[in-house]
Image (cartoon, rainbow, N blue to C red; front, side, top):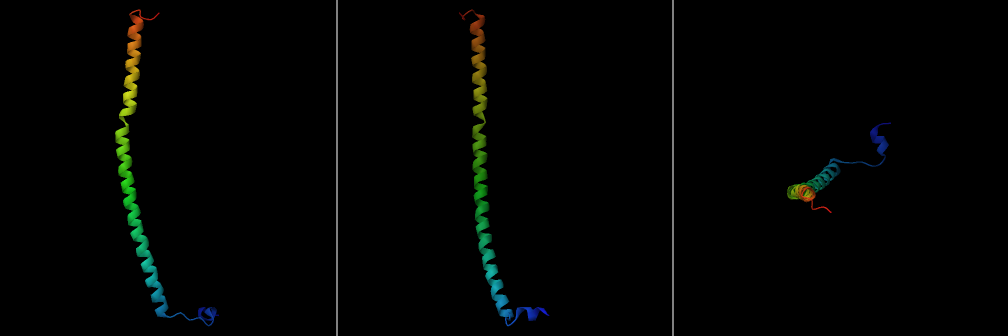
Amino acid sequence: MTQLDQLGPVSIGAREIYDELKTVGVKVDHVSSQLDGVVADVADHETRLRAIERNRWPLPALAALVAVASLVLTLITFIKGGGA
């Protein structure tokens, strides 16, 4: 049994194949344009995350400085006999 026999009474011509190929091409173009939008969104999110990371680093450093200053002041007060 040949491949043509397996199709039975169905015959697919070059025009049908061409039309389907054009439809697939349009869908691929549509998906490609949507993908370009997603890539732009990802780049925007990446830029925003980098800005947040840059602005956040001083907070832990400031907390560490306050803790060290508090410790130094406590030690000075204790050494001078200010502690009960």
